[in-house]
Amino acid sequence: MRISVVHPRELGDIEINAWRELQASHPALDNPFLSPEFTLEVGRLRDQARVAILSDGPSIVGFFPFERHPFGIGMPIAAGLTDAQGLIHAKDIEIDPYRLIKECGLSVFEFDHLIAGQPLLPAAYSRHPSPIIDMTDGFDAYIETIKKNSGKTYKSTVYKSRKLQRDFGTLRHDYEVRDKAPLHTLLSWKTDQYRRTGRTDRFARPWIVRLVENLLTVDNEHFAGVLDMVYVDDRPVAGHFGLRTKTTLVGWFPAYDTAFSKYSPGLIHHLAMAERAAKSGIQVIDLGRGQKEYKDKLKNGEYTVCEGRVARAALGAGVHWLARVPVRKARATVLANPHLRRTADRALKTYGKLRTSLAS
Image (tube, rainbow, N blue to C red; front, side, top):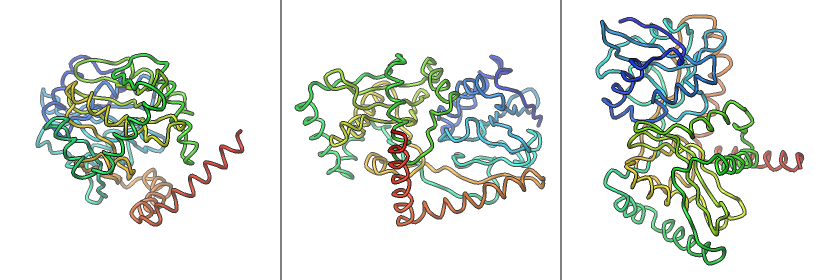
């Protein structure tokens, strides 16, 4: 097997078509974060973006998108943004992950959303649930499972949707919007949410804003950026920007206007989004790893993603271990303990309130 490493901008039609064929041949790879379009768009903005091309004789048998950072530290493409990571590969491929990262010029490769069953997985790693909305049997069948599993939430959401319209006017849902104006409304809500809850504002980094704007313009049969917004009396209430393949939509940036919080606009929007997505051919909405109340209420299935690292005996791997592994283990301990998780969440929200008050 030969391994060559290129920047995404060096990929041609032959490589992109081969990538799509490999992705389509393996159901576990049906995620837009694993599509060539996503890596190409990241590559336009990130000099550290790379793709390893794996060849066996005349055939391309795999693509490994990643980022190469100082000291040979490797990260997934667009690290910190993606809910699915890994090698796009032919079935039954055999690859030594340590040889792969060596050929990529890496001393270590860290991942936190690697899809399960990857030949890239090391001997030791942790597994985590990633909730999904499964609509393979149709939207109506999904709603029936929600009524059964989260009946109180469903009834409350329907009631609040009606009350919202009684109080403010007619509700409208625009799906697959291409206008940047509502996108920026959504991003401003998301920035407010990050700050309010004490999280890092991703959109304070210009390249991420540009990436989202660029992805909004991509729309083909294999991949697209999907923006949808809910309005009441023409006032934006809630929305979401995500990515899709033919049959999978990933939940990426949902947000809402907090002035409407008492109406549960996020749940109203997600149910509306699921219905429109199902009509467009989407069978799965991947809500992404992470424990959130709305995910528990909406999910009717889950995938598994993995967290860990592949490391060679090298100085960079040692530096990375000291900087990252103890922090990751501490975070995992907090997230695994409901009491610690709630305490940490309250602390972040308190910090967010202080930060907001000081900035005003």
